[in-house]
Image (cartoon, rainbow, N blue to C red):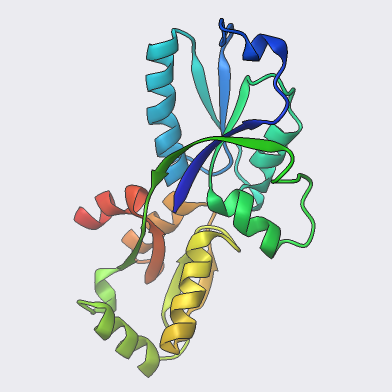
Length: 209
């Protein structure tokens, strides 16, 4: 899962000047707190604040698989003081999944930098009783539709990863949507759902615990 920092395409003169930033900068995360993009946004914002001597303030605006926060940035003043940090799902996958979006990913944003590349982790709750992927596939095939797959957002990269895996392996999951990656991870950790794909940064600490 790639995480990008994007800024509005048209920059005002004040933003392009050497004294940028001259006021606090909003960093919009279009997902709930605790996910990959949110973690990276807070690490990056802290470093930028220290380096540029100006506050970079993280704001979470979740909803519509990242669409609400992304649209907020697209419609903000094009002065460089409202940044978006998102994964490729928000700017690449969504246009393919949703027939209409209130923003144009290719025209309303300019990518600034790739922040990270975080592979997905396939994780299951211990109660599922499997020790590796082979055992998971065998159990899912023996009990079609019984295992619940936690989805961090309909049409998002983790959801599509689950669909592709199931299609390749000939499985049937029962998909349960949650408000975000951190909620999906918490649900599997608590045994409310059985399995999920999610970004390693947000998932691995729980797996280790």
